[in-house]
Image (tube, rainbow, N blue to C red; front, side, top):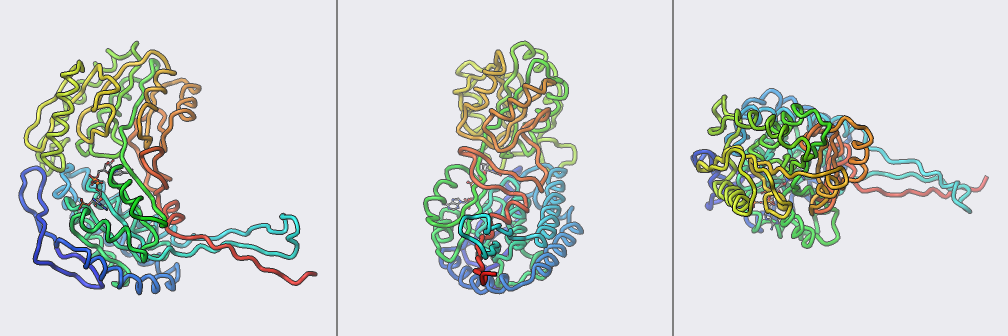
Length: 473
Ligand code: NAP
């Protein structure tokens, strides 16, 4: 595919291959953009931003509504594309395409609800005869830098609110999975998006990132990806608005009064979906000593039943990792943990880019499989004695994106919600669950700011305070 910059589809001599992670087959190529392309794209977006700022909210909403309709009609095609470039199984690809459509639809609704606030200035001392209100205005140009693992939905979580808030937008998709974002750009143009107000530039982040993030014409950066790149972007951004949706190593606490079958079902569903490459994958399974054996007995057959292999085969439940090197990294972390005393319950073998669904027990919190973000199809089980230790272990992480607890005790559940430092907290489900309309974001190294169209629009608009100094009555 070509990239879309300066109001047109554009190609370069230098190309990047986009491959199917399962077999390495080249499915398409994309241009390798340069900082000069970024400059040209932004120059046009400056004009596009003026157009968007003047466009009535109704018209912005209609563009998004039409785009959602086109996406719905092409859900299966988009789903297959997502699975082909990213490696998630077909059901998950089609599911992601459906969610993406929902994000654009909710953004269309929220576009009609961008409001300011009346401020009761006469409640301030000496402010008689003053009338105040706030106005929400677009930021101008929003940069959307996105990761490989949800190549359509996470782009929609930035582009939908950016348009709803009246901005122009430049998308920089992950180089491993750029095709879904380019398809979305096609759809938005078909739905009536002004060509000068949208760009989708492809090429290595290391090469384009600085040109995008340092450019003073960009007012807002919305980034989803790793902590390391996020931190680098914050340094480059200077005085700009930034939203950072970063990584995690999510804990799930299984108390001694948990419904163990439900907990095992949840850990199976959420530790291995997208081959564990979800920012809120269940990774650290903290289990009360008293029920550890029973929990593992419930978990093992469920995880053993997950078939693995070609993501486009309808019976596969766990596909490949996005790159063979990531599968090798997961393999080495698991081997390192086993070498240091962890027990391999099942799995632990790699087949190219596919890593067998794996359960590790007796994991020490300092092992990499627990301490760092694993981003692979393995869960690390660690035991605890009581709720104090469980909360301590859950918080013993640089990250804080999502956490879950299984318990029948309301006091323990509320204590978990109050004391675990995490942006999302689930009671009687694991860390991995998201409705696209809810406020979503992390604490600590998991980032700053919120997504969910209503909340992202707040971050992609600026607030002006207007004070009217009326004649004294
Ligand atoms: P990544 O390596 O950080 O890349 C993310 C994006 O940043 C890609 O588009 C990448 O481009 C670009 N990039 C690379 N270097 C850059 C630079 N110097 N300046 C600006 N941009 C640069 O992340 P990933 O491996 O794709 O995704 C996995 C990570 O995303 C995990 O940590 C995961 O937890 C996190 N994530 C978080 C959330 C959330 O909501 N909190 C959701 C999903 C994923 P290239 O691809 O061209 O290098």
